[in-house]
Length: 197
Image 1: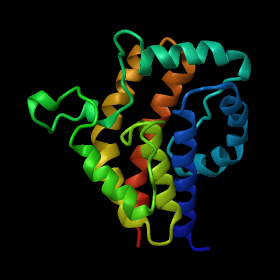
Image 2: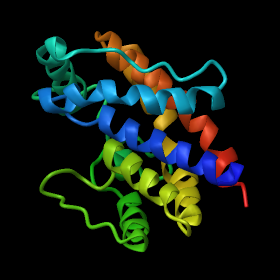
Image 3: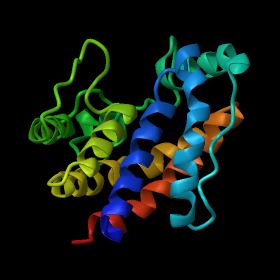
Image 4: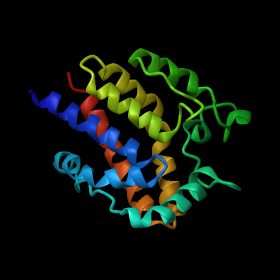
């Protein structure tokens, strides 16, 4: 396997790992997170400062779910909606801080190019976990690099840094603070990977 292929596989694993970590933290999901140690060991050397796996256990599931709901779901005001449409500033004023904004059409086009079908009854297409899962899938395909680059440059890079800052500043939970910082750091690594031929 060539070095670029290895980098793409590592980046794909990282994206899929982030998708899992940003999903709703139910006990079966959290129980699988320790398996991330092997992916972490592969990714860390490629990032300055490494990629520390945020630690948590199933004992923390209730507290994590409470914080997840407070930050990302509600009820009540949600400080950090995990949806690209909410964070886009390159839209008309009436489209700001809305869900299912104009970016969703392009995302759906990218997902179709990958053969991904989104069940919008489960999650919206511009949810952070959905976008990272699509990116991971694109990076794992031999001919998915162009879509991965599009997902990164036209979508994730546009809103994730601002959203991660909001999560770090707003979260009362160490796991989500660490995960947001890690996500922003990991995303800075992706352009170098998708630029390789």
